Length: 253
Image (cartoon, rainbow, N blue to C red; front, side):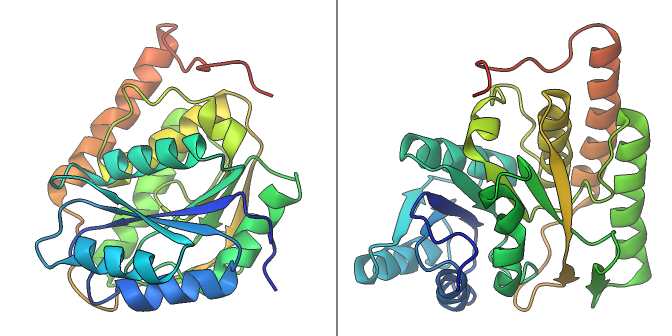
Protein backbone atom coordinates (compact mmCIF):
# COMPACT_ATOMS: atom_id res chain seq x y z
CA UNK A 1 0.00 0.00 0.00
CA UNK A 2 1.20 3.53 -0.72
CA UNK A 3 2.73 5.45 2.19
CA UNK A 4 0.81 8.49 0.97
CA UNK A 5 -2.55 7.50 -0.51
CA UNK A 6 -3.77 11.10 -0.82
CA UNK A 7 -4.29 12.54 -4.29
CA UNK A 8 -2.17 15.60 -3.47
CA UNK A 9 1.09 13.80 -4.29
CA UNK A 10 2.72 14.68 -7.63
CA UNK A 11 5.77 12.93 -9.08
CA UNK A 12 7.83 15.14 -11.42
CA UNK A 13 9.65 13.10 -14.06
CA UNK A 14 11.84 15.05 -16.54
CA UNK A 15 12.62 13.20 -19.76
CA UNK A 16 14.93 13.59 -22.72
CA UNK A 17 15.24 10.60 -25.04
CA UNK A 18 13.75 8.19 -22.53
CA UNK A 19 11.29 6.38 -24.83
CA UNK A 20 12.71 2.97 -23.91
CA UNK A 21 12.38 3.66 -20.20
CA UNK A 22 9.18 5.69 -19.90
CA UNK A 23 6.40 3.04 -20.11
CA UNK A 24 8.00 0.79 -17.51
CA UNK A 25 9.04 3.50 -15.09
CA UNK A 26 5.64 5.21 -15.29
CA UNK A 27 3.85 1.96 -14.49
CA UNK A 28 6.22 1.21 -11.62
CA UNK A 29 5.80 4.67 -10.09
CA UNK A 30 2.01 4.49 -10.15
CA UNK A 31 2.10 0.97 -8.75
CA UNK A 32 3.90 2.31 -5.68
CA UNK A 33 1.88 5.54 -5.38
CA UNK A 34 -1.45 4.66 -7.00
CA UNK A 35 -3.21 7.88 -5.99
CA UNK A 36 -0.42 10.16 -7.21
CA UNK A 37 -0.30 12.34 -10.31
CA UNK A 38 2.67 11.63 -12.56
CA UNK A 39 3.85 14.68 -14.49
CA UNK A 40 6.21 13.92 -17.37
CA UNK A 41 8.22 17.01 -18.37
CA UNK A 42 9.66 16.35 -21.81
CA UNK A 43 12.24 18.63 -23.41
CA UNK A 44 11.34 17.96 -27.03
CA UNK A 45 12.95 14.51 -27.15
CA UNK A 46 13.98 13.56 -30.70
CA UNK A 47 13.23 9.90 -29.97
CA UNK A 48 9.50 10.55 -29.50
CA UNK A 49 9.36 10.38 -25.71
CA UNK A 50 6.88 13.26 -25.66
CA UNK A 51 4.50 11.57 -28.07
CA UNK A 52 4.75 8.35 -26.09
CA UNK A 53 3.97 10.28 -22.89
CA UNK A 54 0.84 11.68 -24.56
CA UNK A 55 -0.25 8.14 -25.42
CA UNK A 56 0.24 7.03 -21.83
CA UNK A 57 -1.66 10.07 -20.55
CA UNK A 58 -4.58 9.34 -22.87
CA UNK A 59 -4.84 5.87 -21.35
CA UNK A 60 -4.38 6.87 -17.69
CA UNK A 61 -5.85 10.04 -16.16
CA UNK A 62 -3.17 10.01 -13.46
CA UNK A 63 -0.50 10.88 -16.06
CA UNK A 64 0.00 14.40 -17.35
CA UNK A 65 2.53 15.79 -19.81
CA UNK A 66 4.35 19.10 -19.95
CA UNK A 67 5.94 19.68 -23.36
CA UNK A 68 8.95 21.97 -23.67
CA UNK A 69 10.37 22.98 -27.03
CA UNK A 70 13.99 21.99 -26.46
CA UNK A 71 16.55 20.71 -23.98
CA UNK A 72 17.01 23.52 -21.46
CA UNK A 73 18.66 21.80 -18.52
CA UNK A 74 17.44 19.43 -15.84
CA UNK A 75 16.96 22.21 -13.32
CA UNK A 76 14.71 24.18 -15.66
CA UNK A 77 12.63 21.07 -16.33
CA UNK A 78 12.16 20.45 -12.62
CA UNK A 79 11.27 24.07 -11.88
CA UNK A 80 8.72 24.06 -14.67
CA UNK A 81 7.24 20.85 -13.33
CA UNK A 82 7.20 22.21 -9.79
CA UNK A 83 5.22 25.25 -10.93
CA UNK A 84 2.65 23.09 -12.71
CA UNK A 85 2.23 20.83 -9.68
CA UNK A 86 1.98 23.69 -7.20
CA UNK A 87 -0.58 25.43 -9.40
CA UNK A 88 -2.43 22.10 -9.60
CA UNK A 89 -2.84 21.92 -5.83
CA UNK A 90 -0.04 19.49 -4.91
CA UNK A 91 0.73 19.19 -1.22
CA UNK A 92 3.68 16.79 -1.67
CA UNK A 93 6.05 16.66 -4.63
CA UNK A 94 8.56 13.99 -5.62
CA UNK A 95 11.41 14.53 -8.07
CA UNK A 96 13.15 11.57 -9.68
CA UNK A 97 14.93 10.39 -12.83
CA UNK A 98 13.30 8.34 -15.59
CA UNK A 99 16.27 6.02 -16.18
CA UNK A 100 15.67 3.54 -13.32
CA UNK A 101 18.62 4.84 -11.30
CA UNK A 102 15.99 5.84 -8.73
CA UNK A 103 14.07 2.72 -7.79
CA UNK A 104 10.29 3.27 -7.69
CA UNK A 105 10.13 0.68 -4.90
CA UNK A 106 11.81 3.28 -2.66
CA UNK A 107 9.00 5.81 -3.16
CA UNK A 108 6.83 4.88 -0.15
CA UNK A 109 9.82 5.14 2.17
CA UNK A 110 10.86 8.45 0.65
CA UNK A 111 7.50 10.19 0.87
CA UNK A 112 6.70 8.72 4.29
CA UNK A 113 8.49 11.32 6.48
CA UNK A 114 7.01 14.23 4.51
CA UNK A 115 3.50 12.77 4.42
CA UNK A 116 3.70 12.19 8.18
CA UNK A 117 4.79 15.79 8.83
CA UNK A 118 8.17 14.67 10.14
CA UNK A 119 10.20 16.45 7.44
CA UNK A 120 9.86 19.23 4.90
CA UNK A 121 12.36 17.63 2.53
CA UNK A 122 13.35 13.96 2.34
CA UNK A 123 16.48 13.12 0.33
CA UNK A 124 17.01 9.66 -1.09
CA UNK A 125 20.56 9.24 0.15
CA UNK A 126 23.35 7.03 -1.12
CA UNK A 127 25.72 8.12 1.63
CA UNK A 128 24.00 7.22 4.88
CA UNK A 129 23.82 3.84 6.60
CA UNK A 130 21.82 1.47 4.42
CA UNK A 131 22.38 3.46 1.23
CA UNK A 132 24.79 2.73 -1.59
CA UNK A 133 25.70 2.76 -5.27
CA UNK A 134 26.06 -0.13 -7.69
CA UNK A 135 27.35 -0.36 -11.28
CA UNK A 136 29.55 2.72 -10.97
CA UNK A 137 33.27 2.90 -11.63
CA UNK A 138 35.73 4.44 -9.19
CA UNK A 139 35.92 7.79 -10.99
CA UNK A 140 32.15 8.32 -10.92
CA UNK A 141 32.03 7.38 -7.23
CA UNK A 142 34.79 9.84 -6.39
CA UNK A 143 33.13 12.66 -8.34
CA UNK A 144 29.73 12.13 -6.74
CA UNK A 145 30.92 11.57 -3.18
CA UNK A 146 33.55 14.28 -3.47
CA UNK A 147 31.01 16.78 -4.78
CA UNK A 148 28.75 16.17 -1.81
CA UNK A 149 31.60 16.49 0.67
CA UNK A 150 32.82 19.70 -1.00
CA UNK A 151 29.37 21.30 -0.97
CA UNK A 152 28.63 20.09 2.56
CA UNK A 153 31.87 21.61 3.83
CA UNK A 154 31.71 24.93 1.96
CA UNK A 155 28.02 25.54 2.66
CA UNK A 156 27.90 24.07 6.15
CA UNK A 157 25.04 21.70 5.36
CA UNK A 158 24.01 18.61 7.30
CA UNK A 159 22.85 16.13 4.61
CA UNK A 160 25.49 13.72 3.34
CA UNK A 161 24.08 13.32 -0.18
CA UNK A 162 23.75 16.75 -1.78
CA UNK A 163 24.15 15.80 -5.44
CA UNK A 164 21.36 13.23 -5.73
CA UNK A 165 18.03 14.03 -7.36
CA UNK A 166 15.62 11.62 -5.64
CA UNK A 167 13.68 13.86 -3.25
CA UNK A 168 10.28 14.40 -1.68
CA UNK A 169 9.18 17.94 -0.85
CA UNK A 170 6.46 19.44 1.29
CA UNK A 171 4.70 21.75 -1.14
CA UNK A 172 4.68 24.80 1.13
CA UNK A 173 8.45 24.45 1.59
CA UNK A 174 9.06 24.31 -2.12
CA UNK A 175 6.72 27.24 -2.71
CA UNK A 176 8.76 29.30 -0.26
CA UNK A 177 11.92 29.04 -2.39
CA UNK A 178 12.19 31.77 -5.05
CA UNK A 179 12.76 29.97 -8.35
CA UNK A 180 14.20 33.00 -10.12
CA UNK A 181 17.98 32.75 -10.29
CA UNK A 182 18.20 29.03 -9.50
CA UNK A 183 20.94 27.44 -11.63
CA UNK A 184 19.76 24.98 -14.27
CA UNK A 185 22.58 22.42 -14.27
CA UNK A 186 21.48 19.07 -12.88
CA UNK A 187 24.40 18.55 -10.52
CA UNK A 188 24.38 22.03 -8.98
CA UNK A 189 20.60 22.35 -9.08
CA UNK A 190 20.30 19.56 -6.54
CA UNK A 191 22.84 21.18 -4.24
CA UNK A 192 21.33 24.65 -4.51
CA UNK A 193 17.75 23.59 -3.83
CA UNK A 194 18.76 21.75 -0.64
CA UNK A 195 20.93 24.71 0.38
CA UNK A 196 18.09 27.19 -0.07
CA UNK A 197 15.56 25.00 1.70
CA UNK A 198 17.93 24.48 4.63
CA UNK A 199 18.70 28.18 4.97
CA UNK A 200 14.97 28.93 5.03
CA UNK A 201 14.52 26.62 8.00
CA UNK A 202 13.29 23.45 6.35
CA UNK A 203 13.60 20.22 8.30
CA UNK A 204 15.65 17.90 6.08
CA UNK A 205 15.97 14.15 6.52
CA UNK A 206 17.80 11.47 4.56
CA UNK A 207 16.28 8.13 3.59
CA UNK A 208 18.76 5.42 2.50
CA UNK A 209 18.47 4.27 -1.12
CA UNK A 210 20.51 2.12 -3.47
CA UNK A 211 21.39 4.01 -6.64
CA UNK A 212 21.92 2.01 -9.84
CA UNK A 213 23.43 3.26 -13.07
CA UNK A 214 20.89 3.87 -15.80
CA UNK A 215 19.61 0.73 -17.56
CA UNK A 216 19.33 2.22 -21.04
CA UNK A 217 21.11 5.15 -22.73
CA UNK A 218 24.04 7.25 -21.66
CA UNK A 219 24.68 9.39 -18.60
CA UNK A 220 24.14 13.12 -19.12
CA UNK A 221 26.96 14.03 -16.72
CA UNK A 222 29.75 16.16 -18.23
CA UNK A 223 32.85 18.06 -17.18
CA UNK A 224 30.99 21.32 -17.77
CA UNK A 225 28.26 20.31 -15.31
CA UNK A 226 30.84 19.35 -12.70
CA UNK A 227 32.77 22.59 -13.17
CA UNK A 228 29.60 24.64 -12.93
CA UNK A 229 28.73 22.96 -9.64
CA UNK A 230 32.08 23.84 -8.06
CA UNK A 231 31.83 27.48 -9.13
CA UNK A 232 28.22 27.91 -8.04
CA UNK A 233 28.81 26.36 -4.62
CA UNK A 234 31.57 28.88 -3.98
CA UNK A 235 29.36 31.70 -5.30
CA UNK A 236 26.50 30.71 -3.01
CA UNK A 237 28.79 30.88 0.00
CA UNK A 238 30.33 34.16 -1.13
CA UNK A 239 26.90 35.73 -1.63
CA UNK A 240 25.85 34.56 1.81
CA UNK A 241 28.93 36.08 3.42
CA UNK A 242 28.02 39.37 1.72
CA UNK A 243 24.51 39.26 3.14
CA UNK A 244 22.87 38.11 -0.09
CA UNK A 245 21.70 34.75 1.15
CA UNK A 246 18.35 33.06 0.44
CA UNK A 247 15.14 34.89 1.23
CA UNK A 248 11.69 33.25 1.22
CA UNK A 249 9.35 34.15 -1.62
CA UNK A 250 6.48 34.23 0.87
CA UNK A 251 6.06 33.53 4.59
CA UNK A 252 6.03 29.80 5.39
CA UNK A 253 2.75 28.23 6.48
